[in-house]
Length: 306
Ligand code: RIB
Ligand code: CA
Image (cartoon, rainbow, N blue to C red; front, side, top):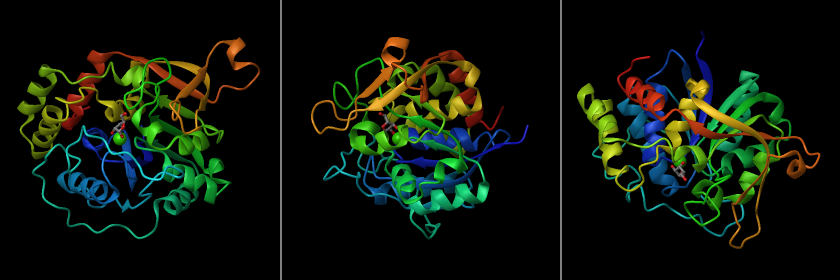
């Protein structure tokens, strides 16, 4: 099986960092060809630093990191999350990055790379601002995207940032709306499933036994981030790309609330024929996961095993 080439758009963030280490631990199956960064969990500068700190830890300075949106499309300023610590990696002792940023803005680079690849898979685990900007700048972009795997949203459960909205969609509801209106094949891993993909003491213990620098950092993140938010949101998106059979999905027509009030970022998921009301489903919502299989896949990958 040839490895799936994909672009990773993210806002590291501890769980984005764990998602990166999961993906990089499985080069047999996933080929992360570029990273684009967006402000989210923390501001753009620490996000850019963290993406490069993790790539350098994994010895993958060859993967280009592109800077992207420092704020949402419409909101005056993006929220930041209190879950990831002021540095965004739960107080990691990783050194500051030495690898330079790659030239170009994420929105332009997403378009350029997609066109060069012909058909590009994107995994997005932060606010969708870069992706939305890319779609606005290049209306033909959907022709060059095979699929988008998204961590974001809360379809059938309460939000985590507001009662109705999950963080990534709450930060930039307009970007999420643009992406879900794009017609690109979408898989949405929202809180519906990521609340089932949680850190366990056994997982931490197993990772601590691996004994590599990558595993040591992963254990740090699992312990220090996991103590605030035990859900492995972003690693679940990578796990979907690795082993979709571990998950349950439902086809739905998803729209995103963009008015600025209490519903901003809310996912309206129409599943029944009556609710879909003649519209075509535009995404697969992931609703369940075999948590044991997920944990096993995650720990094995951190040890560089299949
Ligand atoms: O709601 C959780 C999501 O928001 C995760 O992707 C986390 O990293 C933040 O971006
Ligand atoms: Ca994230």
